[in-house]
Length: 129
Image 1 (cartoon, rainbow, N blue to C red):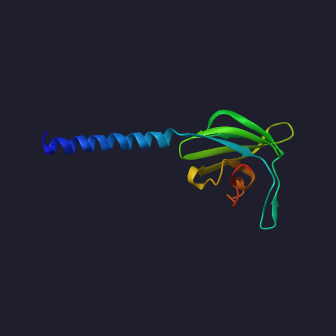
Image 2 (cartoon, rainbow, N blue to C red):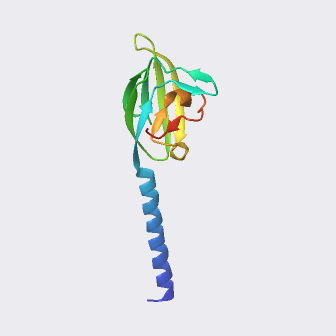
Image 3 (cartoon, rainbow, N blue to C red):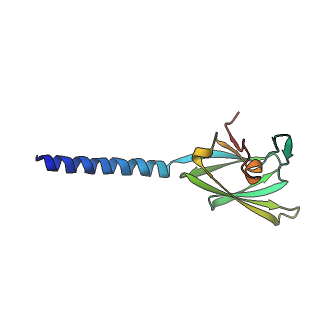
């Protein structure tokens, strides 16, 4: 083999390895738990929602969570959007929140929508205890 062919082969191999790493990272799925729990930050208590519907990345069935409830979802990719719809006593949508976050912002596999909906307060994501 000529030196030029060796360089081209090495570059092709590097490109395929890079593509493989990219595809792995983009397609990797994570299981997360979504909480609807009261939250306290700097002396202020944020109450949990009475009832909400949570849709993850606009896919799948929405999770129905009542106050203090927890649901599970699977996310894939690096950026995510939660659509949180507050429900009234008759299960009609009163208010909607579109909440976005990235995997690198998460501190654990539990996401509490209450601090996330109130301006992404510290502690919105934490490890399972």
